[in-house]
Figure 1 (cartoon, rainbow, N blue to C red):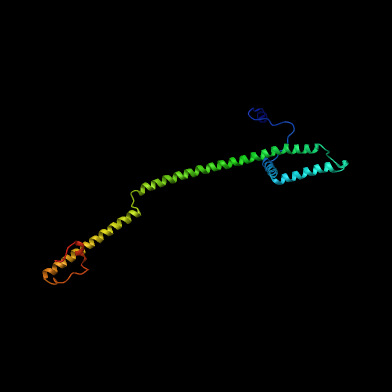
Figure 2 (cartoon, rainbow, N blue to C red):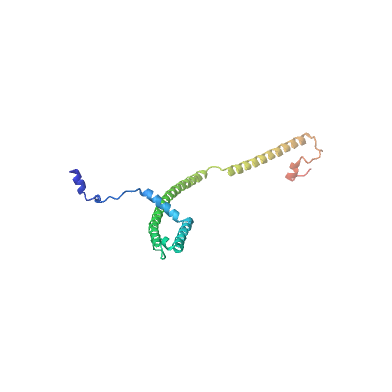
Amino acid sequence: MADQRRAERLDQPREPRGVKLPRFDPEAFGRWSEGIARGMGTANFIVYMTVVIALWFGWNTLAPAHLRFDPYTFTFLTLILSLQASYAAPLILLAQNRQADRDRVALEEDRRRATLQKADTEYLTREIAALRIAMGEVATRDFLRSELARLAEELDEAAQRRQKLERRQQEKAVRRGGEGLDEPRDDLDGDYARDGRQEG
């Protein structure tokens, strides 16, 4: 009963009746056709074909009449070349179709990889932008160097002012005590020259 229902289903094709053709592996046949097409697309094939046709012409023209198997007009050679052309064209087309399928698969894989790379690039771009925003409030190395140099200059100026103040206080103490008033000033007392004061 179940077999009868399965046979009566209209959404499935019927099994072919009559002579069953032998089945073959399409992949193996495709590889074979590619090998033939690849061999026919070389210079060696053209050279060998030219040599065979030249020998064919030479034998059927110069050999004794009873040994010629394809006399002038070369009908048998024309038949062979026609058969070769009629089989070569579909084999070449089959090889081209297989190459087109491989190219399509490779193109889809390249497109998929390009999409992934684009997504990765966009993600990295967003991350770099976020880092720039976060780094906007963080002191950079150049900023720290400039600030440290400014602080060092300020400390140097403060130390110079402190030295000037100490010298003035020492000079005032010396003047009050009355010692060393006649001592000439030397080059070490450069503060007076920088301040614009002269000896009195």
